[in-house]
Length: 219
Ligand SMILES: [Zn+2]
Image 1: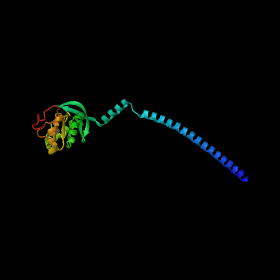
Image 2 (image 1 turned 180 degrees about the vertical axis):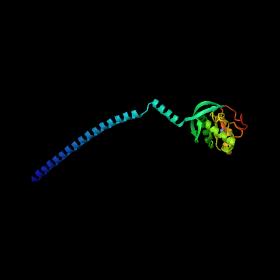
Image 3 (image 1 turned 90 degrees about the vertical axis):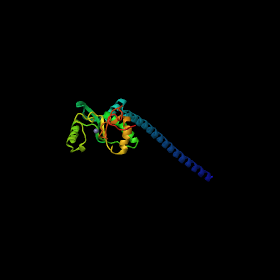
């Protein structure tokens, strides 16, 4: 009988212990649920703030095109007054190609030529493109004195096609692979040779036959 009482007492004690333990667990669970709810609320609040911040950062289409224009105007620059047949034409916009000034208008055409050459494994580099009156004066003096620029032929200041923007001197035309590629392909992109003594001097003259100025065979 004693044993039964002791057993019953132990059973009550265990039950109490379990009960208090369960209460504690319930309290813990409630606390976790409360915390979880708080975190959930904070999460949605942060998400809303993030969305608002992203909407502020996203530029409108107008702002995007304005920044694109800015990028273009930064890479092109006023490279001085163009001349044609002795007459000043006004300022030109240039970009630097291989460190040499080239009008943006010619650059657009030259890019097509250069890309096609590159695709054929031929690297076209620019030695000279747009020239200012001062630069042409310097080269003309070299031509007269034969003491600089190899004494190469140079037109009078104001009369060079490097001054109206259509001419480009291409490096390496003494190399057969470069010259042969130009001879066979340049006219497809509007570029033709115009000076008999200069294999490097090419001009953009859309639609001109490749041998209209200098007699050389081309495709
Ligand atoms: Zn030239």
